[in-house]
Each structure stands twice: as C-alpha cells, then as structure tokens.
Length: 188
Length: 203
View (cartoon, each protein chain N blue to C red):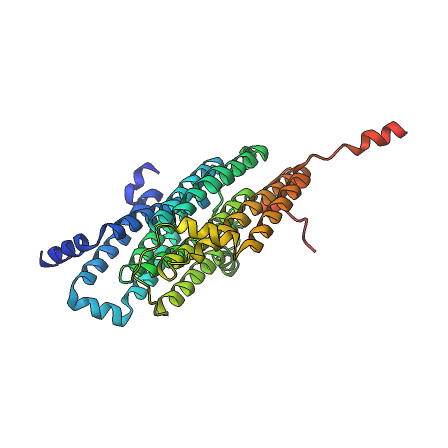
C-alpha cells in the first residue's frame, strides 16, 4: 500500500475528486460573474449539465475505488453550489432542504443499523422543517403559518423518535440484533 | 487576470447573509453525510447534534427565533439523548461494521451476475439523486414572487395567538398524540415479566 503513491491511495482519490469539484465550482462562479457569459449559462442550462457532470464524475471515482462517503460529500456540496448560485434565496433554501432530504433517504435505505435508520428519518423531518420555515419567511411573513406547521412536525418527530426507539429496544430484546438485514419478523 | 478581478468583485458583492447561508449549508450537508456514513454509530449520534445545531442556525437566519430555540431543545438535546441511550442499550460494539459497505456479500461470480449486484447496490443512490433532482427542477421552474417585507418582530406573539385560537384543535390533538406516544413507548420498552417462573411454581 505504501509504494502506490498518494494519488493512488483511497484518500488520495477522495481528495482528487474534491479538487476536481472545487475547480468546477470556481470555473462556474467565474463564468457566472461575467455578465457576458452569465446569460449564456442561464439560458442554456449549463448548471444542470454541470450537475450531471459532477454526478458522473463521482460514479467514475467510486468505480476506480474512492470511498463512497467522501464522494457523496464532495458531490453534494459541489452540486448544491452549482445548482443554487444563479438562483434567489427562496430557491436556495428549498434546494438545501431537498438535498438534506435526499441524503436522509439514502441513509435510510442503506443503513444496516436500525437506530441509524431512525436518525436518517429525523434528518428528513428536519429538511421538511427548513422547507416550511423558508416559505413562512419569503411567502407569508405576516401570519407565519409555516412556523405553525413546523411546530406540529416537531411534535410528531418527538413522538416518532420515542416510539421508534422503543420498537428498536423491543426487537433487540427478542432477536439480540439491530441489523436491518437480519430482521425477518414482518416477512410474509 | 481580468477574469479573476471580475470573480473577486462578484464574490465581494455578495452580501453577508448569502455567505453565512453557504457556510451553514455546507456545514449541514457535510455533517449529515457524516451521520449516515460514520463507522462508529455512537459518534454519528453525536454528529447529529451538529446537524441540528446548523439547521437551527438556518432557522435564526430565517427569522424564526422561537423555532430555532425549540429545535435546539427538542432535537439537539432531547431526541439525540434518546438516540444515544438507545444505542448504548442495544450494544453497538457487537455490530461495528460500516453502514455503507461496498460488496460485503460480493460473491466470486463474474460478469453479468456481478454487474446486476452492483446495480442493486447502486439503486438507493440513484433513488436519492433522482428524487433530489426532480424536487429541484420543480422548485426552479416555478416562478416565485417573494415578498420583500420582513417577518414581524413579534412573530412569537402571532404564533402563540394562532396556536390558542385558530389552531387550538390541532394543538390539543398534538398533546393527545404525545401522550399516546409516551404510553405506547413505555408499553413497548417495558421488560416483560418472566412467565416460566409462574408456570414452574404451579407445577
């Protein structure tokens, strides 16, 4: 492992991917800052193309052996900046909430530990809260109805966490494991 | 060099709120990736506090002061505490394997079978990226007309009045739901009595 060199090691590939994404962001912001090229970018949907480029590059790097979490973090931050830089504030908040929702969904499906599944669900509920509060700030600032709904979501999240963790404890007592792949209680 | 000067002007012309938003957003994204991918699950439970703190910072930027503090109290203290205690009770050391594991059950098969296995493992990522992108396109294609006025400074008062007048019925239902969840959680988590002892006594 030692004689392979830094760029061939796993963490080197992570850093290489991060550096490529960073260069992409810098180039994108550079083109966006210039008024002549800004219209070209916005009219031709270059940012969406760059998003697909970042995703494809991430798939390529996972294919050649970079670690998945590093690639997910770099790709998520890069695509978030690229997709929201030309937009206004409301779209930025909503995109952040969509991104956190996507990360939570990925974690919920991929996790092996049942408690981590619950953590991912909390993440998704938080993303929804950001959504509602952004709406109450930018669309309805007088009667802040979005914050009301966020309070109710907070309540439901607390109840869900208590019941979910109690279920996890009960299952652990019966089966001595919290591995999702070993649960077959509800199979028909 | 010219391009660099234009970029510098662009970055410095962005206001402080945008800069702060991006700092907090990047913090929240990277910490949440840490939550779903840390090998040590106790540590990911503590990283979750950081995610909730970052999101409460976002709430402060959105002028929802009450919800920011409620977020810190309920999520960052309450729910995370419950999660960590549940982790300690379920003995996470015995299953310390990574969450996002590549090919633990990768068989030695080659060719098409391995390709299909890889596709199966890539499905969650595809679903997540696809749903994010769909939501993003829906958000972006809508032409929002944001109002320019600020949130009123007494929005906590507005919230309290709405909760006790117009939304009093959902508020009561929320309290009943909490009570039911509490009782249900106690019922589920309570250790059952050992029945065999009684049976042997009868024998």
